[in-house]
Image (cartoon, rainbow, N blue to C red; front, side, top):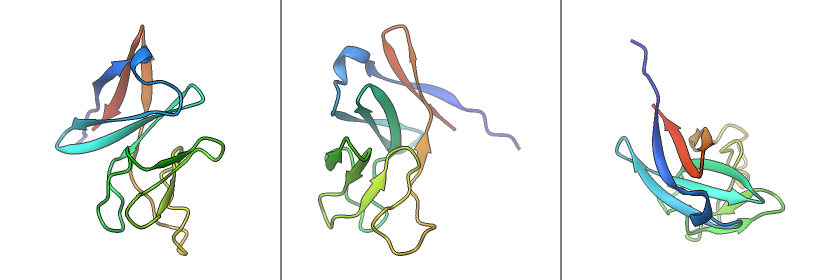
Length: 109
């Protein structure tokens, strides 16, 4: 059975400034959307370690990473890879982001 994706409207481009993040809900999960130097990223808004939210974590724009405020677990926003875990195969979900006109959308399945 094939799962089709659909777009979830996040906000207007002008409402998510550089260095900011926003949380949206789609298909029963929270997704964090980040604007890093004009590039948009979307990841699951939950730290896989202990369930902290990532949209309010510390953003490192130079490294394109976010760090969970609860216990310091860090994630690469482009890949979802947990950069602070010793195993190389620990990831959180990522989602494609697109801009149509002046609106930001996240593609979810």
